[in-house]
Amino acid sequence: MFVFFLFFPSMVQMDSIKSGFVGSQVELRCIFINSSPPVKISQVTWQKLLNGTKQNVAIANPALGVSVLPPFKERVSFKQAAVRHRTPSLEDTTIVFSNLQLSDEAAYICEYTTFPAGNRENMVNLTVFARPMTRMTLTTPTIVARAQKRKMTVATCVSANGKPPSVIKWETRLKGEATFQETRNQNGTVTVRSNYVVVPSRETHKQKLTCVVTYRSERITDSVVLNVQYEPEVKIEGFDGNWYLNRQNVQLTCRADANPPVTVYQWKILNGSLSSFPNVEIKNNTLFFKGPVTYDLASTYVCDATNGIGTRTGIVDVNITGRLMTAEQSNTGAAIGGAVGGVALLSLAAILLFVFLRRRQHTFKGDYSTKKHVFGNGYSKAGGLPAHPPIPKNLQYPDDSDDEKKPAQIGGPGGFEASERDFDTEQEDLKRPYFTVDEGESRDYDKRTLAFQYDPEPEIADDMISQTDGSVISKKEWYV
Image 1: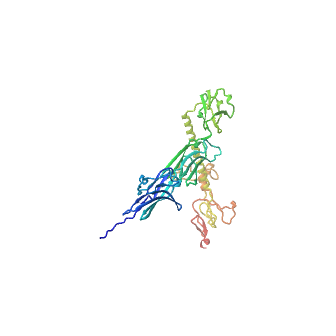
Image 2: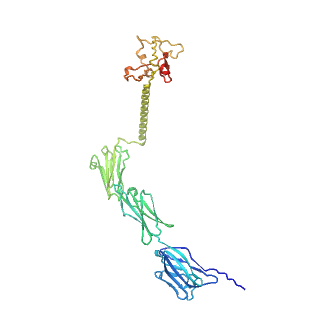
């Protein structure tokens, strides 16, 4: 009879990757799966593999017991208490790292020595992370806005000694720009530094600036509020444009937006001295005019406001009216002014249009081609200009004429009367002669050829041919 045995080879089970943060605790699992029939475990050895070099970490031996070697002695232990017994159980030899350090990052081998099967081993890669120290600071406790409008770093955000390195972003309404710098440290960590640069001004005062640090899946934020010092922004309030004669108890107030606050206000006028006004009282930033308003109060008032950064000035021109101007009167005046302005604008447009049309009627009508041109009614001097028929001294209108109510005679010896002889402007322009100069002729206007637009049209000479553009040419030019 033959007996067959099924043989299952032994194996070592481990995690392929483990990780932890500096200062934390991490377990490196190692389980021995025995064969069938089982083999005898002679020893278990943990080794650190770094840059091709092996270093013993811990050893468990059934006869000699457990041993943890320096520099791991104070931080490494076997998880299972049975391993430390007089008759140890070595199937589970998981070790525990306490107070993890960056130098612990390496590959770790768990090796089983068995009889008679020999050695069995496996390996785990341990990664150590370093959570960065993040802080955000103002460059200086107080930022001063200068008149030169220079850029300056107002805040700094640092993510120090992180592994892997962090990513820094800024969240703010400020219009500025950020700079970034990475520094790799000897222990393998990275320090990331970012500065935020702006032009300090009154608008940047009390603005919130937030630094956002992203480390792996974590989001770390820190914020500051800017304290920007600036010169006073000054304006004078109180003059409403309606200081009328005998109005009672008016006042002017000097308002200043400043950081730090204004400490000194000084009032003055450009065309005199406030001391000449006996009814004027100065109290802090306000001028009180006691009693009725007089014409003497009309002036340019100046307020100088001073803080620890500098001095700025506000100005207002005060005029005095003879009587109270109501809002309705003010609106009516504005409406009348608008209407007058509209009429003036329309009149100007009409004048420009008239001038344009008159000039257009006087426009040069010819061109400079070699053709003989027609002027006015389109006849060339080659065809001749018909004589104007004599104008009868007596004009008669038919009974059904629209002009029957006009006088039947045009009196006056030798032609028209003065009133009838002056043609209407438009009729006169239509009959005004147009002229051009034949090519090759002098531009002396004494040699201009004139033609009038009168009906009936004269006949064109037999040797001339009329063109579509109003000119005529000789038959010789036509058949060339």
